[in-house]
Image 1 (tube, helix red, strand yellow):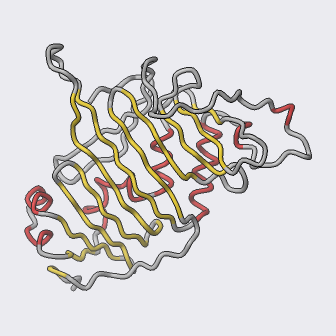
Image 2 (cartoon, rainbow, N blue to C red; image 1 turned 60 degrees about the vertical axis):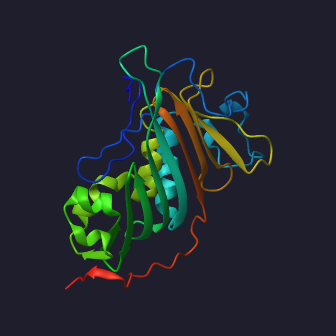
Image 3 (spheres, rainbow, N blue to C red; image 1 turned 90 degrees about the vertical axis):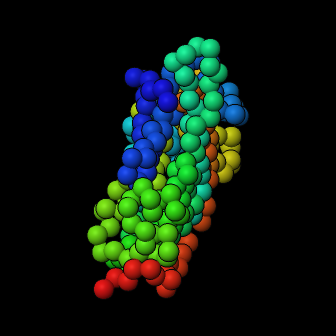
Length: 261
């Protein structure tokens, strides 16, 4: 995977030797998302008056945009999201065509400290549940082999030492950190001014002339995300968010191959 000095940011990793860098903020001028954002000019702050509607996110740029979105996410509570990133391998040998590499995927519901998630990185798959201060992990044979713990492939393993299991996957298991990672690192982050009464607007990553990604957020109330789409020479990614603030019931699994005590 290539990494540009203008904005590569890591999205994830995997257990043991598996590490997957997510670089979604390159400055390549010919790269762009599958769907380009509308050619809407950035907002003029002088147009913001007492009769204006919406949350005004488009009046900010750069770190201000990211901070406001991340703060909204931290206050929102539970969420459900799914997503995947497929890396693109560009061989050093010019005679070999670029080709797709590993795929990193997540299916998450809950909030920090109480969640259930299914994670995939290449040939490794892992199911995680965090409930009542304990972490339960169940993996496929590849995960059990990588970690050297056969019990992972036989059922859920309970542990009170969450860091050892969660650390490699952490960006995918924290909604605010995930979105912050997706947005951070680009030389330009700006928000398009929505049409009147539009429910959403676009956060454009990489500049309006040659964007490499967009994050759709609410244009009124808290600027909570609903969809992320990006692609450049390093790969393609997409994440969808729903159910912000809606309670999610998370219970500890009962199919244990290694109990807590």
